Image 1 (cartoon, one colour):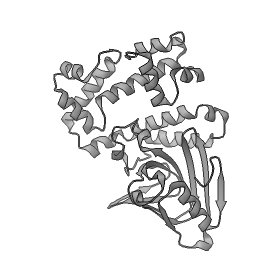
Image 2 (cartoon, rainbow, N blue to C red):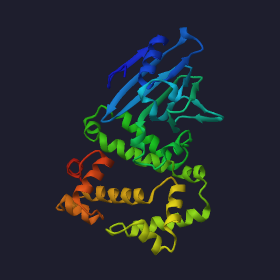
Image 3 (tube, one colour):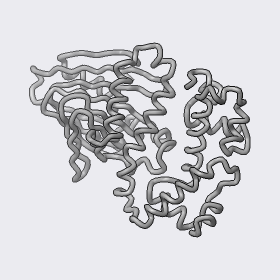
Length: 315
């Protein structure tokens, strides 16, 4: 990365700005209608394993070359949140228009373009493919789908990111960086949940069975022997059909069970009501067969051990 985390660049030199953008995101070509009137800025802030990158510019057109570029970051996804101005992203025959508060996920292994005709601010968060995969079984399904700010969950997500960016220099944000970012990605996938059915063509019948399965899982979450076989048997469907309806919704059965157990464990660890419980007891009480397995899974999801997570705050 050309700029070090926490660095800023503000310039009227288009070549300088373009060079920095290329070093930051890779695989790009850029043009502006009038170099003499160009104004641009880049502000990078690091929060644990993630960089928040605010890009500001007068009118410009940017082409992302996808995997044909030689930059090592091309296999990352990129969340783009429109802070001000309006922009247009084109991917193949698809055109997505973003207004302030809108956001989407770009797949940097694909070619696409970004353009804007006025002074614009866009906050970007590069995400490794395997990291987004922690939150969604098929992250590519989420790419280039508009998250409309008029929907309640998307409005919350936009406000969350704006608040996170505004408070980035506060000690509280630095201390809780991992948790804040993890919570954001949890909500981000929830914000795209309505798209899962559209992008994977899940039928209304399958959707009904999926909801029954989810309800059964959530009611029996603490059952240590909860498994696809048990769920299928209790709901009188085949395992193959069970796997199919979850797959069509961009989920996995085991992943859904694990995600809910970890969320429940995190809730317990944050609560003063359960502060006397040991980590092992929390593990067993949320359906894990061993404390070691629980700790590894918890750290993989929240980037902290259960003990570290517990030390930060209590509800």
